[in-house]
Length: 284
Image (cartoon, rainbow, N blue to C red; front, top):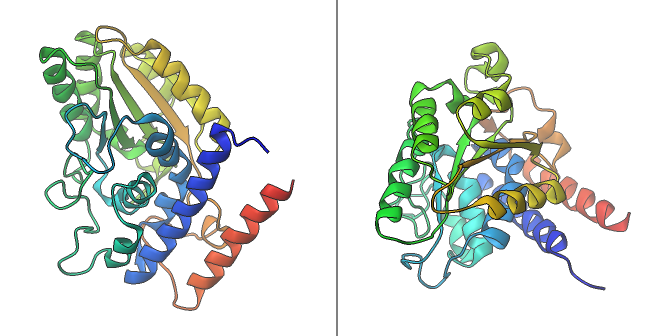
């Protein structure tokens, strides 16, 4: 049987979800729901899209992936392990004293972590500056900035969006996790951001909105953005509608899902549900 790009990404996302559950169990809690929700998206970036060298994370010719939402680090660690930048065995140190894998991303600690994210609204501004700097160097590396729908509440995000369009940063792609949930409640209740597509389009970006848990749709969107990526051109944004806890029904339906506390006996149940769902999908 021929293995397609989509097959490879699906398999990577499945393994990443297991990594996420294993890391989450180390602490018994964390941003597991968001991480499961974006596993498909990061499987695409780190196994299909990014130019990188696993053995040389500082390679000058690499594409850059900026994690603006530092608390999503658990998802990025899983992706970096899948890409070969981190050994899988190291994931069990997640959040522990002396670990290179803190609960919030720190560029000074972790290979493949380009920026120290966390205070929301900063990632896209850094990405704009980085894109300008690489342009001045005459290189063609692409920059992907991952941010959350909550960051669309931040004025700095829109200032950066307008700046990127003004400077025609055509090698910049923003990836927005539209999971509709923030720390203080549903995004629509904290500060409505819709219609998000029209806002990005008005800011001058090539805009796509996809099901962020549909690998085929993600690959098509990334391909469309790649076809337009030029040193001078329109920046791209992919708005990804994701589901918190994707792949684990127990967590998909959990009410308090922003920062999850998962009981000790539930972790294996989560793994079993993930495995059962994956095997069922493969059998169809």
